[in-house]
Image (cartoon, rainbow, N blue to C red; front, side, top):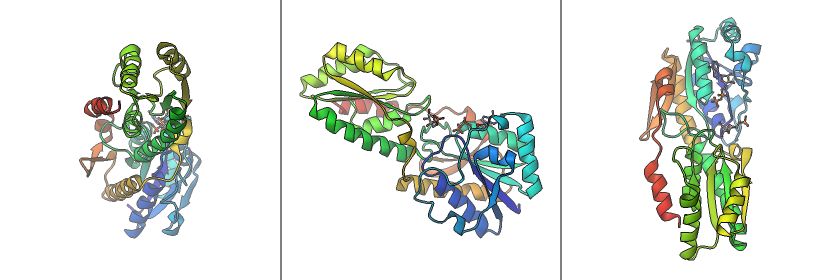
Amino acid sequence: MRKIAVLTSGGDAPGMNAAVRAVVRTALNAGIEVYGVIRGYNGLIKDEMVPMTLRSVSNILQQGGTMLFTARSPEFMTLEGQQKAAENCRKRGIDGVVVCGGDGSFRGAQKLSQQGINCICIPCTIDNDIGCCEYTIGYDTATNTVVDLVDKLRDTCASHDRCSVVEVMGRHAGWLALGAGMAAGATSIIVPEVPYDFQKDIVDRMEYTKSLGKHHFIVMVAEGIGDVDELAKDIEKATGVETRATVLGHVQRGGRPSARDRILASQMGYYAAHLLMAGKTERVVAINNNTLMDYDIDEALAMKKPFKSKMFRMAEEINI
Ligand code: ADP
Ligand code: F6P
C-alpha cells in the first residue's frame, strides 16, 4: 500500500472533518501518500482529488460539515461509473479508499471493492441508523443541537401554556427523537420503531401530566411519522391546548462537533487507516461497549440495531 484516498459521501455529519483529519495524519505518519477526494464518489468519477499534507487538515477538527464536500452520486450507482472511479484510482496509484458516510455510501464502497480498490468505511450520520455500531459520528452533536433548540422552544411554549410538536430528522429511524426527547423532557416521543396511539400516547398523557400541574408540553416526533401541522391541529382540538408545530430541518446537521464526536471520529479514522494499511478491504469500523471493532460490509448492512425500548419507557415514566 503506497497511496490511499479518503472521501465523504451522502448526508454530511458533524465530525466528518475530524475523521478525515485522523485518516490523513495516520497514513502520512506511516509514510503513505493520501488524496482527498472532492464531493464523494463524484470526485472519483471526475478525477477530482487533491494531495493531502499534515497541514491541509489543520483547523478542521472543530468545524462542522466536510472540507472535502459531499454528494449523492447517481452516476456511481451504475457499473460504468464504478469502473471509471476504479480506473481513476489505478491511474493515480491509489490502492485503497476510506469512505466516510452512511449505509448508502457503504454499498458504494462494496461496489468499488468489487472493482479491485480496497475500501474501509466509517459510519458518519446524524441518524445513528447503522446496525453494527452503537454510536455513529454526528449523532451526539445533532442530539445536542436538537436539545438546545427544544430548550429555546420550551421557553416560549411555557410562557404561553402551549404544546410544541417538534419534528426531528432521522430518516427511517427514531434515535435522534429518542435521545433528544429524553434529554429535552418531551412529554411524548413518537418514533417509527414503536407503534403509537394518538389518544393514549399523546392526548391521555397530556391530560394526565396536566392533572399533575404541567402546563406546557413537548411532543417530539421523528420525521416520516406524518404531517406535524395536522398533528398539531388534532392535538389542539382534542386537548384544548394551543399547539404549534416546528420542523427543525437541516439546522440539525450543522454546527461544531461535540467533544464526543471529535473523539469518536479521531479513533475511527485512526482505526480505519490502519485497517487499510494492513491490506484489509470491505470492512466497516464500529464502536460497541466502548470498544472499536470492524465488520464485513455485508454483515454490517444486514445487522439490525435493537431499539432502546427500555430507555423509551424510562423517558415516558420520567417526562411527566
Ligand atoms: P448515505 O451514505 O448517507 O446513506 P446515500 O444513501 O445517499 O447516503 O448514498 C450515498 C451515495 O452512495 C449515493 O449517492 C451513491 O453514489 C452511493 N451508493 C448508494 N447505494 C449504492 C449502491 N447500491 N451501489 C453503488 N453506489 C451506491
Ligand atoms: O441521513 C441524514 C439526513 O439528514 C436524514 O436525517 C434526512 O432524512 C436526510 O438526510 C435529508 O436529506 P437531504 O439533505 O438530501 O435533504
